[in-house]
Image (tube, rainbow, N blue to C red; front, side, top):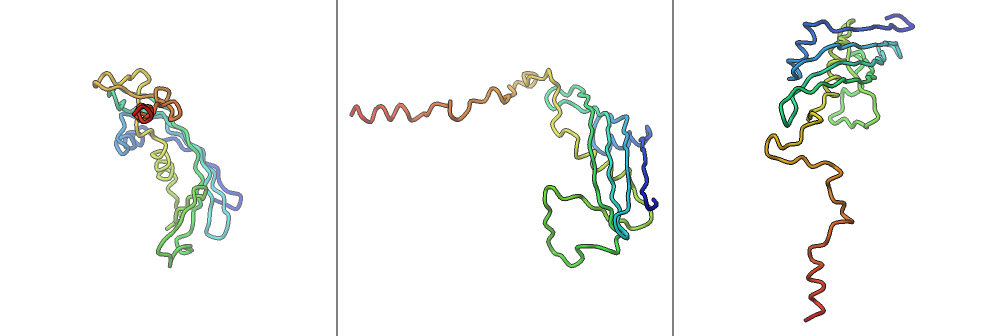
Length: 168
C-alpha cells in the first residue's frame, strides 16, 4: 500500500456479477464498479474510502415484472490488524449510528470485493415496485402516503355520543 496509500479501480467480471446476483437473489446484476482509496492511519491500521455503483434487476413485489435500478453507495471502513483487537475483553459492544465500520485484517491481503459486495447488499431495495404497479393485479389497493388521512383531519367516532349527552 505504501506510506501515501493506494488508489484502485475495481470492475466486476461477468462471472462475479452472476455469482453476486445469485447470492443476493436478484434477477441480474451488472456494471459493478468501485473506486477505492486505502491509506495507512496508524501502525497496523488502514482506512478504506470507496464509492461504488451497479445496475440491478429485481422482481416487482406486486406484479413480479422486472424492475431495473441503479445503485450507488459510499463506504468508509477502518481496517484493523487482528493482533490489535480493540474489544478483546468486552462482552457487549455499543455502536453509534455515525461510527465508522471496522474490519479485521488477518493477513497481508484485503478482500476489497467482499467489502464492496457487503455494502452493495445493504443498498438493495428490499421491496422493489414498478412505478405502474397499482396492487389491483393481486386484488389489493396500494395505499400511498398522500392517500392517508392525517390525524388532525380524522373525525372522532365518539363525537356523535358527545352531542347526545346533553339531550337526555
